[in-house]
Length: 423
Ligand code: GLU
Image (tube, rainbow, N blue to C red; front, side):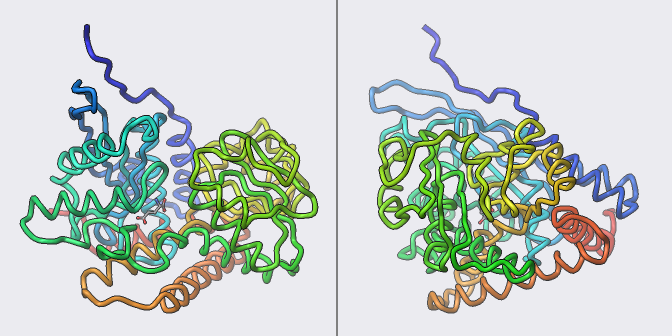
C-alpha cells in the first residue's frame, strides 16, 4: 500500500485579495510597472517534502513552505502556520501582508511566511517535535537571524519555536536565539510576546475610540476566533471597560447582551474549540456573530470571513482585523459604501510582529527588558503607526486599508529605489 501524503489543495482566494489590494495601491501611487510586477511576486519560495517517523513505526511524508516576499527593508520576518488548509498561494499572500505590515509600523524587516500542511492536534507530542525539527532543518538553508526570522502563527506556539531554535543551534554548534521569535522567556523569548497581538489590538481599538469619539466604557464588542489573538483581545478589552458580548471558535459562538464572563472563558482557551461546551450565554452561529449590532467587530480567525455575500448583514460600526486577510475586496467595497470603518490587519494585528522585533533586538544584544518597557514601546510604535495611517487616510480621502497600503508600499518602494536594482 502507498502511504498517503497530505499535500496542499488550491485555494487562490487569499492571494487574489492580497494582489487586488496591492494593485489598487500601485495605481494610486502611479508605480512603475516593473516595480509593481516585482512586488506582485515573491522573491524566494521554498517548497519542501519531508519524512517524519510516526509513533507506530510508519513514515509519513509532509509538505511545507517558506516564502520570502521582499527583503528591501531588512531580513524577512513572519510566522509559521500548521494547518490543513495551508497552500503555496496562501503562504504567498501572508508573506506579502508581512512586508506591508513591517513597513507600516516601520520595522526594519521584509516579509515572509511559512507553513506545513498538517492538523497539529492529530499528532502526538513526539510526532509534533519530529515534524518541527525536520521542517526546521529543511528550511534552515534560508532562515537565520540575519536572513529570515520565523515566529508563531495559527497552529504553532512557543514550544514549537523552542524546538526550531534548538534545531538550528545544534546545526550551527552554538545557541542561536535570534533565529526565531515567540520563544518561551527561558530560552531568549521576551516578556509580553504571548499577549502582544491582542494587546496591540486593544491599543488600536482605543485609538479608534479616541478618533471617532466612542466611549470605550460599555462599548460592545464581538470577537470571531478565540485563539491567541482573539482570546487575549477579548480579555484586555474587557479589562479596559468594553463589553464583549460575543465570542466564537470553530465549534460555536456564544452571545450574552449583558457581556460574557471572559475571564472564565479564557481559562478554557487551552482546550480545542471549547465554545460548544461553554456556558454563560446563548449559542449562536458564526454568521450570526458577524451580523451582531456591536460597536466593534474583531475577526481573529481565518482569511476570507467577511465577503461580498455577508458584508451587507454586518451591523458593526468598526471592523478591527485581528486575523490576516479576513475581509475580501468585495466586502471592503460594501463597507466603504455603508460607512463602516475597517482598521486593516497590517496595522491592527501588528502588535505581534512589533514585539517579535523587540525580542530579536534583545536576543542580538543579549540584554532583556522588563515587561512594562515592552508594553510601553509597543504602545508607542502602534499608536504612531495608527496616527500615520489616519493622517494618510484623511489627506488622500481613502479608507484606512488604502492608506495603510499606500504607506507600506511606498516605504518598500522607496527602499528599493534608494538601493537600486542590482547589478
Ligand atoms: N504571525 C504573526 C503575524 O501574522 C507574527 C509574525 C512575527 O512575529 O514575525 O503577524
